Length: 139
Image (cartoon, rainbow, N blue to C red; front, side):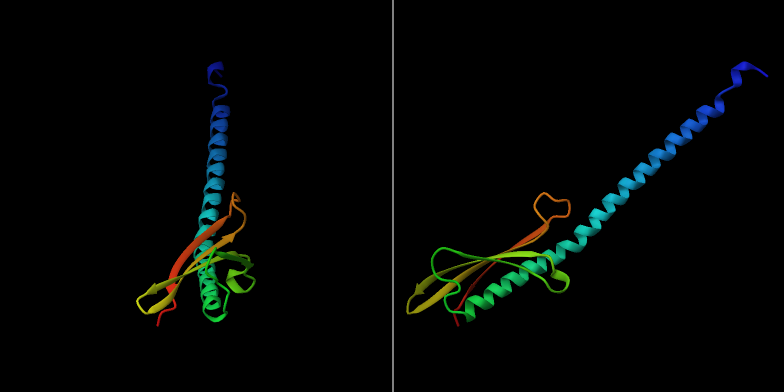
């Protein structure tokens, strides 16, 4: 037996061990990215619909409850959604209105803003959507 041939299997074993460890670390990283992508793919549309529900709530309130959206500085209301698929979203709605006179007609112009948030800003799973709409009470 020659002395120069010893230790080759040790080098191969270390190489294989390092490669398997690197492949495992890569798979864990890809799995984490995939989880985050899936979470945002699910929470993004929910945040949109939560913000939209805030707009619709504000619209209904402004047109049916006198004085809920007075002329002047904007009014802001915050609430948490607790039912169904939108449970857990915090919604902040703002209503602004102004009177517009054109000729003999007087109209109220409304501007609604709704911000829906899941989690806290800076968190890994934080998602938010902001919607804005403008309407008038003209017939």
